[in-house]
Structures are given as C-alpha cells and as structure tokens.
Image (cartoon, rainbow, N blue to C red):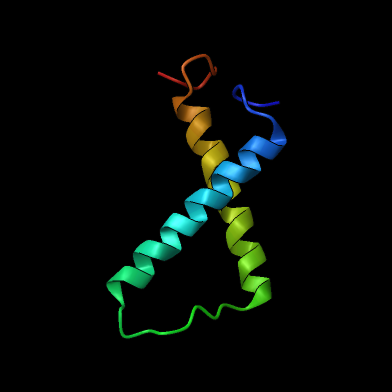
Length: 68
C-alpha cells in the first residue's frame, strides 16, 4: 500500500488517467479514425505514467517526507 491506496487501486487510477490522456489526444485530432499504438510502446507508456504518478505523489502527498 502506498499513499493510502492499494497497488490495484494505484494501477486502476493510472489506467483511468491514461484513457483520459488518449481521449484528449483523440479529441484534438478528429481526423484520426484509429487508435493504433505499438504494444511495446503501450507498456513503456504505462510504466512511465505509473512512475510519474509516484513521483508526483512523492513531492505532493501531505505526509510524505519530500512534500512542502
């Protein structure tokens, strides 16, 4: 458990954020009709998102040592 969330909850919220990201990109490019993305890049992007969320929490979560 990290930051009051289970690993599954952290994975779910990051997955939801990824979907919101892609929805925003798709909205800005209405002429694009598919959502193809290479499997290896999908894995790398998901890992980068999880790392970004953890780093963001590291600096912003109220009870964490690096928070202001």
